[in-house]
Every structure is written in structure tokens, then in C-alpha cells.
Length: 107
Image 1 (cartoon, helix red, strand yellow):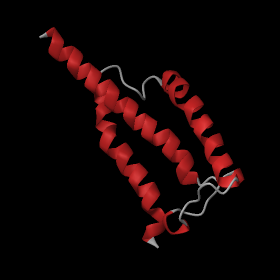
Image 2 (cartoon, helix red, strand yellow):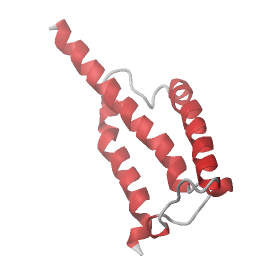
Image 3 (cartoon, helix red, strand yellow):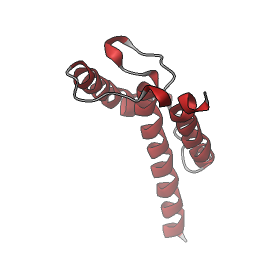
Image 4 (tube, helix red, strand yellow):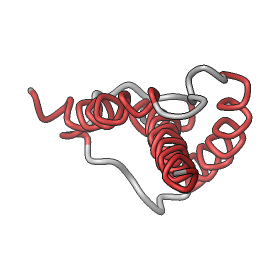
């Protein structure tokens, strides 16, 4: 039964590990509009790509590792969250590294 939650657990761990990075710099969560403008258009594009690929039989998802909740066109909910969580984690990391490098340059 726990195998079905692996994808979601991994996404949760990614968020948990990068959450402290919000403390560096101007923050990512503190700028929700900017975050949405950065993540949502790309996520939408990849979700359409996924839906087309699933519909064409180009790829599938192993049902043993997903919850079984799907959006229309067969896209698993975990894939939707992937396209939101991973870019968010990337932005948190980029923001933190940029802030640290800026501080070190000022010294």
C-alpha cells in the first residue's frame, strides 16, 4: 500500500528539504504573483504535453507508484504536482544561492 504514495512522498520531501531556503533573500513564497508567473505557464505547457503523450500511448505511469487520482486526459495528480513542486524547489534553491553569493561579494 505504501508504494502508491511514493511519488507524493518524494514531492513532499522535496518541499520539506527546500522550505528552509525561504529564509534567504527576498523569498519565493512571499512573492506569490511572481511565483505564479514563473511556474504556472510552464506547468500548463507540460501538462498539455503529458496529456497528448498519454493519449497517443507514448508513455504511461506505473499504477503501483501513484494514487490513482487522475485529471482529465489521464494525467495523474502526482504529475500535476511535480510540475508545480519541482520548479518551486528550483526557485527556492536559486533564490537562496543568489542571496548567499550576493552577501559574500559584499564582504
